[in-house]
Image (tube, rainbow, N blue to C red; front, top):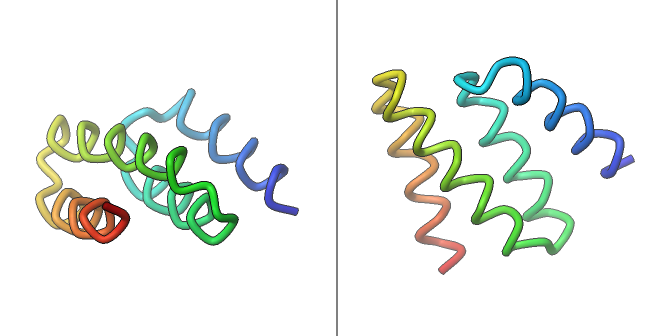
Length: 70
């Protein structure tokens, strides 16, 4: 169930805000559910997290997806 998965991502990110993969997976889930505006916000937050933690690879991947979403 999508809502349950998103709730779990939110809990995960609340306790581990620098777990960049969580933002990416949540954004993918939102995108597949047709919720692109929410996915964009999640990606922006994830990019900030990636910058904070020096994770250039994750930052690049999320930036590419964000660009694709327009």
